[in-house]
Amino acid sequence: MLISSAKGRSGRPAESRRTADPGTAARLAQFFDALCSAPRSILLLDYDGALAPFRLDRFQARPWAGVSQLLSLIQAQGKTRLAVITGRPAGEIGPLLGIAPSLEVWGLHGAERLFPDGRRELEQTSPAAVEKLDVLRAQLRRDSFGGLFEDKANAVVMHWRGVAPQKAHEIERRTRNLFEPLAQMDGLHMLNFESGIELRVGRDKGGAVRAILAESGADNEPVAYLGDDLTDESAFCAVNASGGASLSILMRPQERPTAANVWLRPPADLRNFLKRWAQGSGRAGKRAPGQRSFVSRNP
Ligand SMILES: [Mg+2]
Image 1 (cartoon, helix red, strand yellow):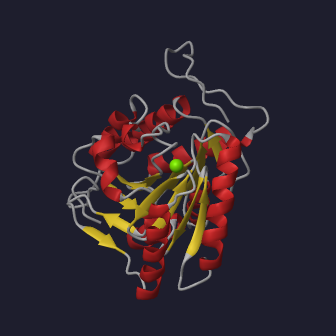
Image 2 (tube, rainbow, N blue to C red):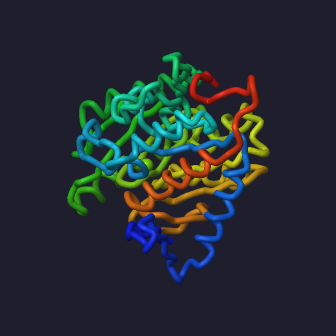
């Protein structure tokens, strides 16, 4: 699916359909019809690769032009529960997005939760898992095989993005040899992503989506999830299993096998999708007196 950024005769953004995927435009239209008639909705977003281009220095990974403004508009409408679900520590997202008030962020692939009011929750980890991760951290600080070692509260991570293919293969081989024997012990498991592996404990992105849907009572609320990486597949599955109108979106330049039901390419498709969301949410019925708004709500 490609939503073109070309202008139609009306001067508004025109959409074109990939002939190989004729159902995508219809699926989007069906979803936005549901959004327009719903008083509330849920928009869940991965960050790196989905809202922002990758940067070797991840602290330079700012959103594509216009994205923060569109998210701010959707937030200000007060009808959408917005949350970022990312592999990063949750506290990194707010300064990069630059949205006030802050969005709800689930960090560490869902093991950490940062509320808009600054409260932070971290899933409990077993002492045995903590001990094993500590040993691994010390080992990788001494020798990270030429890759980039990242130390997370619930995980150790090895990155090889930007490394030459032969060297990347060697880093991956040595990392797997180290991680795989530990991956079945004490709740530890491996999480593969593009150009890296994580050995971790705790909730994954699918678990974060299920937690959000459960506390929202979201059976009748349209829900969408946007993500680009292998770690987003569990979130796609969780959204697909929800009871109401749902849309799982693979947001990346190249298509790949996925559980997502729509493929869009950033940044033009992303901006057009968020514009449609803002338009649809803006047309949705006015809130009844006393009905909650997601702007000031601390979920
Ligand atoms: Mg991503």
